[in-house]
Structures are given as structure tokens and as C-alpha cells.
Length: 420
Image (cartoon, rainbow, N blue to C red):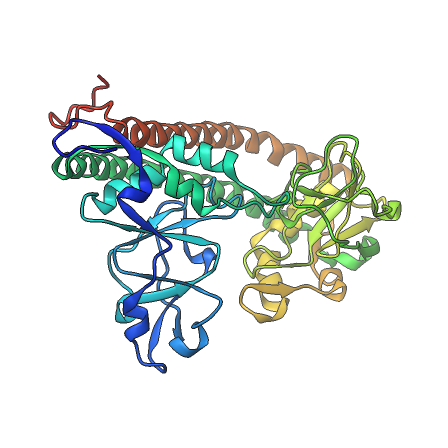
């Protein structure tokens, strides 16, 4: 147990914080009062929160998790827990209280622990890895039990030292965050550069040779099926169904899939093959109509009903069609014609796709264009890979720094950040 005055001692978290406590501030609110509502998608890995949603107390009295200012919210479900999306709510709650998904554990710091220090404990490597190991439930629906949090052993010191550690980490994590933002802006610039390359070639060809409706090159448009799947990716010997995330700005990612249960017979008519042109049928307004060509073995993967497969005539290369669809002109048409009642999901019809304009050029010029853009994209891909590596290293640095600091392995008093 923790002994007041000791340098650093190990104790169970339940001695210093309440786990999933009642919220008296919520109980005191009038039945018709409004409060902040927080779904999981409004909690981001970098600690940012969207607290703009409101609901009346009467609609969240049962079936929701309650919290108040000063509480730490720890996601309990996989993979959100492993993504280290715990947050400390210091202000911004309407009437000082909120309600949210039941997939949250609430930690309320006691008088002998600094809330920011406690937050950093939930971001430390031991907490995340041991929590992941303690999860129970079926694949894709595993959750961290509150007993794990109650009994988690933390290295505890006096409040003054906890605040020094929290101040040190606040400063260092802020610096890491600035570098992270800079690198992400660089990624955005690379994306803009890549888009400009595509637009320049497609506009040049369209201006010189004119365009034809995409239907002139289309033999068939089909959508697959979406049976109930497991939440884990398929292995080499297993059947899987593609996810929407398998298509990203002209690139195909076959590892983004969900395993088809053994008891479900795969409909091999929808097996995805090399050369298939895939277009997302339903997605967010920004991503609907995203396109990719299947360039390598799909490992027994099936087409879902959220993705169209467009079979083309011999007169048009799938890779050239992909570039035309990625052009800003066609993307603008997609945004204008996509239909839906929700801002989070809109759909394209096959008739929409058939009307998209593509440059009227022969196969030879299509090949030259595809090769020209691919060559220019290589340098962009190399830079993008290096930036992504730097982002990964920053994330590793952040985790290591937090873990060492809360364990008392960093001399924060001198602000040198040297590991003892």
C-alpha cells in the first residue's frame, strides 16, 4: 500500500480513484434539463473531444454511462481500448454532466491522486497491454472488465511530484503533438500534389481528345453480398469479405477484410480477382465513389454490397479508368449526384457511374498516361512512407515517455527528461 511521505510505492488503483461511480450532479438535474451526450466516435486518440451533442436527461436516464467534470473516460471495448483513447474531461459539459455510450469505464480521482497523472497512467504501456490481456468476450466484442482497472497496480508518489510529472508530460506531449500535426500537414500537401498530377493529365487529354460517357466502356456493374462476418481479418486459407477501407484513393488493400464464418458457404461468383475495377457504392460524402484496381491476389475475398465491381470492355484499361474517376471533375460529379438522407452515409447508383465522363483516347495513350503518372507517384509514395514512419516513431516516443514518467524513471524535477 501507499505510505504518505514515501518516494514511490505501488498500490492498487481502487485505493486512489472511484471506478464507475455514481454521478450526484446528474441526479440533481431536472428531468427535462439538457446535458452533453458523447458517443464513442466523438472521442479521438489524441485527446480531442466533440462535446457539441445535446440530449434531455429524460432520454438518457437508463442505458447510458454518466460522467461529470474531472472524470476520466476509458473505452472498454476492443479495438478502441488498445488505441489509447482515454480522455480527461476538465470542462465543456452542459450543466457540468454528460452521458454516453456504455462502452466506457469512468475513473474519478480521489484526493491523493492528480487527475492528469491518473490519465497518463491509462495511456501507459503496462495499462494498455495488461488490459488487452484481461479482456473477455468473443472476437471483435472483447471488453476490459472493471476488476482489471480496480486492481491495476500503479506507482504512486506524493501529489506534488504527481503534478510535476503531469506538467512535464503535458509539455512534452504538446511538442510531440505539434510535430505530429506538421507531419500530417505534409501528408496533406502530398495528397494535393498527387491530385494535381492526375488532374493535369486528365484535363489535358479531355481538352485535346474530348470525352465519352463511361457507359461506352462498361460491360457490367454488379454489387456483391454482405453476409454476417466475424470481426477479425481472414487468414490465407479462409474466405473473407472486403471492407470499405480496402479502397483508398486508387490503392487496393486486401488485408482490410472480415472473415466469413466457416458455416457460411461463399458465393464464388463474387470472388474478387486481379484486374477488377472496384468503386465504393455507399460511404461518407467524402469517400463515396472511391476507386481502386485489384492488382494482386486477393486471398479468397468476396465483393460486399457496399462496393461495385465494374467490368470494362477491352477498349479501356481499368487503371486508366481509375485515374479518370479520381480526377477532381468526376469527384465533383460524384458529390453532386450521391444520394442519401444522412450526412454520414450516401450512395451511388449504377446509372450515376455510367454517365461519368472519361477522356476519349486509344489504348496506347492510356498506357502511356498510366505509366507517366505512376512514375511521378513513386516519389510521392516514397515521401509518404517516410512521413508515416516518422508518425509511428512519434507515437512510440509518446508511449515510452508516458510509461517511463508515470513509473518514476524520468527526472522531471530538472526538466531534462533523462532516464535514471
